[in-house]
Image (tube, rainbow, N blue to C red; front, side, top):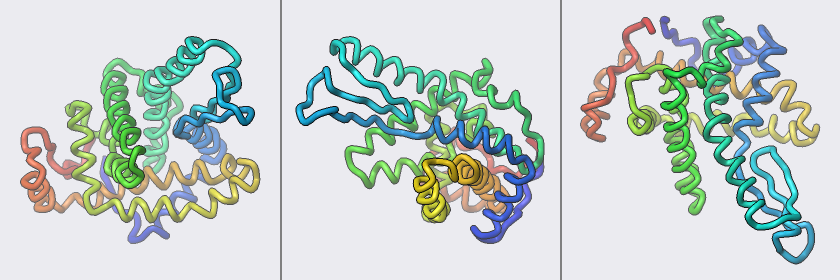
Length: 261
Protein backbone atom coordinates (compact mmCIF):
# COMPACT_ATOMS: atom_id res chain seq x y z
CA UNK A 1 0.00 0.00 0.00
CA UNK A 2 1.33 3.41 -0.94
CA UNK A 3 1.39 6.02 1.80
CA UNK A 4 0.41 9.33 0.25
CA UNK A 5 0.64 12.69 1.96
CA UNK A 6 -2.86 14.18 1.83
CA UNK A 7 -2.58 17.26 4.04
CA UNK A 8 -0.33 20.17 4.87
CA UNK A 9 -1.89 21.19 8.18
CA UNK A 10 -4.34 20.09 10.84
CA UNK A 11 -7.27 21.82 9.11
CA UNK A 12 -6.81 19.74 5.95
CA UNK A 13 -6.41 16.54 7.97
CA UNK A 14 -9.66 17.14 9.82
CA UNK A 15 -11.43 18.03 6.59
CA UNK A 16 -10.42 14.67 5.14
CA UNK A 17 -11.50 12.94 8.37
CA UNK A 18 -14.95 14.53 8.11
CA UNK A 19 -15.26 13.37 4.51
CA UNK A 20 -14.36 9.79 5.42
CA UNK A 21 -16.86 9.76 8.29
CA UNK A 22 -19.62 10.98 5.96
CA UNK A 23 -18.71 8.35 3.35
CA UNK A 24 -19.49 5.47 5.71
CA UNK A 25 -21.43 7.35 8.35
CA UNK A 26 -23.42 4.78 10.30
CA UNK A 27 -20.58 2.26 10.56
CA UNK A 28 -18.17 4.96 11.76
CA UNK A 29 -20.77 6.04 14.33
CA UNK A 30 -21.14 2.46 15.59
CA UNK A 31 -17.42 1.72 15.76
CA UNK A 32 -16.48 5.19 16.97
CA UNK A 33 -18.89 4.91 19.88
CA UNK A 34 -17.63 1.42 20.77
CA UNK A 35 -14.05 2.66 20.63
CA UNK A 36 -14.90 5.58 22.90
CA UNK A 37 -16.41 3.19 25.45
CA UNK A 38 -13.33 0.97 25.37
CA UNK A 39 -10.88 3.86 25.74
CA UNK A 40 -12.69 5.66 28.57
CA UNK A 41 -10.06 5.23 31.24
CA UNK A 42 -9.98 5.55 34.95
CA UNK A 43 -11.17 3.98 38.17
CA UNK A 44 -13.46 6.24 40.17
CA UNK A 45 -14.35 5.48 43.78
CA UNK A 46 -17.27 7.35 45.26
CA UNK A 47 -18.97 6.97 48.63
CA UNK A 48 -22.74 6.96 48.65
CA UNK A 49 -22.79 8.91 51.92
CA UNK A 50 -20.44 10.97 54.04
CA UNK A 51 -18.78 7.93 55.66
CA UNK A 52 -16.54 5.68 53.57
CA UNK A 53 -16.97 1.96 54.13
CA UNK A 54 -17.08 -1.16 52.00
CA UNK A 55 -20.87 -1.26 52.13
CA UNK A 56 -21.41 2.22 50.66
CA UNK A 57 -18.87 2.46 47.88
CA UNK A 58 -19.76 2.93 44.22
CA UNK A 59 -17.11 2.19 41.59
CA UNK A 60 -16.71 3.26 37.99
CA UNK A 61 -14.21 1.52 35.73
CA UNK A 62 -14.39 3.10 32.32
CA UNK A 63 -18.10 3.36 31.60
CA UNK A 64 -18.99 0.42 33.85
CA UNK A 65 -20.77 1.46 37.06
CA UNK A 66 -21.53 -0.81 39.96
CA UNK A 67 -22.34 -0.57 43.65
CA UNK A 68 -21.04 -2.70 46.49
CA UNK A 69 -22.94 -3.82 49.52
CA UNK A 70 -21.03 -7.03 50.05
CA UNK A 71 -17.74 -8.24 51.42
CA UNK A 72 -14.30 -6.90 50.69
CA UNK A 73 -13.32 -10.13 48.92
CA UNK A 74 -16.30 -9.84 46.55
CA UNK A 75 -15.41 -6.24 45.77
CA UNK A 76 -11.78 -7.08 45.04
CA UNK A 77 -12.75 -10.07 42.90
CA UNK A 78 -15.10 -8.00 40.75
CA UNK A 79 -12.61 -5.16 40.30
CA UNK A 80 -9.90 -7.65 39.30
CA UNK A 81 -12.27 -9.38 36.86
CA UNK A 82 -13.00 -6.08 35.12
CA UNK A 83 -9.30 -5.17 35.09
CA UNK A 84 -8.27 -8.52 33.58
CA UNK A 85 -11.12 -8.30 31.09
CA UNK A 86 -9.74 -4.95 29.96
CA UNK A 87 -6.35 -6.50 29.30
CA UNK A 88 -7.56 -9.66 27.58
CA UNK A 89 -10.68 -8.40 25.77
CA UNK A 90 -10.91 -4.60 25.64
CA UNK A 91 -7.43 -3.97 24.25
CA UNK A 92 -7.55 -6.53 21.39
CA UNK A 93 -10.98 -5.19 20.44
CA UNK A 94 -9.64 -1.63 20.57
CA UNK A 95 -6.81 -2.72 18.26
CA UNK A 96 -9.31 -4.06 15.71
CA UNK A 97 -11.38 -0.88 15.84
CA UNK A 98 -8.30 1.31 15.33
CA UNK A 99 -7.30 -0.79 12.32
CA UNK A 100 -10.79 -0.41 10.84
CA UNK A 101 -10.49 3.38 11.04
CA UNK A 102 -6.92 3.28 9.78
CA UNK A 103 -7.92 1.49 6.56
CA UNK A 104 -10.84 3.78 5.79
CA UNK A 105 -8.58 6.07 3.75
CA UNK A 106 -7.83 3.37 1.18
CA UNK A 107 -11.36 1.94 1.56
CA UNK A 108 -10.11 -1.53 2.52
CA UNK A 109 -11.80 -1.76 5.93
CA UNK A 110 -13.97 -4.82 6.48
CA UNK A 111 -16.20 -5.66 9.39
CA UNK A 112 -14.22 -8.79 10.26
CA UNK A 113 -11.20 -6.52 10.79
CA UNK A 114 -12.77 -5.54 14.14
CA UNK A 115 -11.77 -8.92 15.57
CA UNK A 116 -8.27 -9.05 14.06
CA UNK A 117 -6.75 -8.39 17.49
CA UNK A 118 -7.98 -11.82 18.58
CA UNK A 119 -6.25 -13.68 15.76
CA UNK A 120 -3.51 -16.06 16.88
CA UNK A 121 -0.77 -14.10 15.14
CA UNK A 122 -1.80 -10.83 16.79
CA UNK A 123 -3.33 -11.60 20.16
CA UNK A 124 -0.33 -12.10 22.44
CA UNK A 125 1.59 -9.15 20.95
CA UNK A 126 -1.39 -6.82 21.24
CA UNK A 127 -2.14 -7.87 24.82
CA UNK A 128 1.47 -7.48 25.96
CA UNK A 129 2.15 -4.18 24.19
CA UNK A 130 -1.11 -2.54 25.26
CA UNK A 131 -0.66 -3.79 28.82
CA UNK A 132 2.82 -2.23 29.00
CA UNK A 133 1.52 1.00 27.52
CA UNK A 134 -1.35 1.20 30.01
CA UNK A 135 0.98 0.28 32.86
CA UNK A 136 3.37 3.13 32.06
CA UNK A 137 0.51 5.62 31.79
CA UNK A 138 -1.06 4.33 35.02
CA UNK A 139 2.26 4.66 36.84
CA UNK A 140 2.61 8.16 35.47
CA UNK A 141 -0.72 9.23 36.95
CA UNK A 142 1.05 9.49 40.30
CA UNK A 143 2.64 12.59 38.77
CA UNK A 144 0.46 14.36 36.21
CA UNK A 145 3.19 15.48 33.80
CA UNK A 146 4.75 11.99 33.34
CA UNK A 147 1.30 10.55 32.62
CA UNK A 148 0.77 13.04 29.81
CA UNK A 149 4.29 12.42 28.50
CA UNK A 150 3.80 8.64 28.48
CA UNK A 151 0.39 8.99 26.81
CA UNK A 152 1.85 10.87 23.85
CA UNK A 153 5.11 8.91 23.80
CA UNK A 154 3.19 5.69 23.15
CA UNK A 155 0.52 7.22 20.95
CA UNK A 156 1.58 5.21 17.87
CA UNK A 157 1.88 1.84 19.61
CA UNK A 158 -1.44 0.43 18.44
CA UNK A 159 -0.68 1.27 14.80
CA UNK A 160 2.95 0.09 14.89
CA UNK A 161 1.69 -3.31 16.06
CA UNK A 162 0.14 -3.80 12.61
CA UNK A 163 3.00 -2.34 10.57
CA UNK A 164 5.82 -4.18 12.35
CA UNK A 165 4.72 -7.63 13.56
CA UNK A 166 8.39 -8.61 13.84
CA UNK A 167 8.83 -6.40 16.91
CA UNK A 168 8.25 -7.54 20.48
CA UNK A 169 5.96 -5.61 22.79
CA UNK A 170 8.79 -3.65 24.44
CA UNK A 171 10.39 -2.90 21.07
CA UNK A 172 7.06 -1.59 19.79
CA UNK A 173 6.90 0.86 22.69
CA UNK A 174 10.49 1.94 22.04
CA UNK A 175 9.78 2.57 18.36
CA UNK A 176 6.72 4.64 19.25
CA UNK A 177 8.93 6.66 21.59
CA UNK A 178 11.31 7.37 18.69
CA UNK A 179 8.61 8.18 16.18
CA UNK A 180 6.75 10.56 18.51
CA UNK A 181 9.92 12.54 19.21
CA UNK A 182 9.13 16.00 17.89
CA UNK A 183 5.50 15.01 17.20
CA UNK A 184 4.00 15.29 20.69
CA UNK A 185 3.06 18.95 20.38
CA UNK A 186 1.26 18.27 17.08
CA UNK A 187 -0.62 15.29 18.52
CA UNK A 188 -1.53 17.38 21.56
CA UNK A 189 -2.74 20.22 19.30
CA UNK A 190 -4.90 17.73 17.39
CA UNK A 191 -6.44 16.44 20.63
CA UNK A 192 -7.07 19.95 21.93
CA UNK A 193 -8.77 20.93 18.68
CA UNK A 194 -11.65 18.62 19.66
CA UNK A 195 -12.29 20.28 23.00
CA UNK A 196 -15.38 22.18 21.85
CA UNK A 197 -16.82 18.95 20.48
CA UNK A 198 -16.19 17.36 23.88
CA UNK A 199 -18.05 20.23 25.55
CA UNK A 200 -20.94 19.81 23.12
CA UNK A 201 -20.98 16.06 23.74
CA UNK A 202 -21.22 16.69 27.48
CA UNK A 203 -23.94 19.30 27.02
CA UNK A 204 -26.02 16.89 24.93
CA UNK A 205 -25.51 13.96 27.34
CA UNK A 206 -23.27 12.19 24.84
CA UNK A 207 -25.54 12.51 21.80
CA UNK A 208 -23.16 14.80 19.87
CA UNK A 209 -20.29 12.50 20.79
CA UNK A 210 -22.03 9.40 19.47
CA UNK A 211 -23.36 11.03 16.30
CA UNK A 212 -20.21 12.90 15.34
CA UNK A 213 -17.34 13.58 17.76
CA UNK A 214 -16.28 9.98 18.55
CA UNK A 215 -15.99 8.74 14.95
CA UNK A 216 -14.53 12.06 13.82
CA UNK A 217 -11.75 11.94 16.42
CA UNK A 218 -10.94 8.27 15.75
CA UNK A 219 -10.64 8.96 12.03
CA UNK A 220 -8.42 11.99 12.58
CA UNK A 221 -6.12 10.00 14.88
CA UNK A 222 -5.65 7.32 12.22
CA UNK A 223 -4.97 9.89 9.50
CA UNK A 224 -2.37 11.62 11.67
CA UNK A 225 -0.39 8.37 11.91
CA UNK A 226 -0.69 7.63 8.19
CA UNK A 227 0.47 11.10 7.28
CA UNK A 228 3.34 10.85 9.72
CA UNK A 229 4.49 7.78 7.77
CA UNK A 230 4.08 9.59 4.47
CA UNK A 231 5.91 12.70 5.61
CA UNK A 232 8.87 10.61 6.78
CA UNK A 233 9.29 8.34 3.77
CA UNK A 234 12.26 10.39 2.59
CA UNK A 235 13.69 11.17 6.03
CA UNK A 236 16.28 8.40 6.31
CA UNK A 237 18.79 10.73 7.96
CA UNK A 238 16.37 11.54 10.77
CA UNK A 239 15.94 7.85 11.52
CA UNK A 240 19.71 7.34 11.53
CA UNK A 241 20.05 10.12 14.09
CA UNK A 242 17.33 8.56 16.23
CA UNK A 243 19.11 5.20 16.13
CA UNK A 244 22.30 6.76 17.37
CA UNK A 245 20.57 8.78 20.06
CA UNK A 246 18.45 6.00 21.53
CA UNK A 247 20.70 3.00 20.81
CA UNK A 248 17.97 0.85 19.28
CA UNK A 249 20.01 -0.28 16.27
CA UNK A 250 19.42 -3.97 16.82
CA UNK A 251 15.67 -3.82 16.39
CA UNK A 252 14.78 -0.49 14.79
CA UNK A 253 13.20 -1.27 11.40
CA UNK A 254 13.84 0.69 8.28
CA UNK A 255 11.58 3.74 7.91
CA UNK A 256 8.38 3.04 5.97
CA UNK A 257 9.83 3.56 2.47
CA UNK A 258 8.95 0.25 0.87
CA UNK A 259 5.64 1.47 -0.49
CA UNK A 260 4.07 -1.97 -0.20
CA UNK A 261 2.78 -3.54 3.00
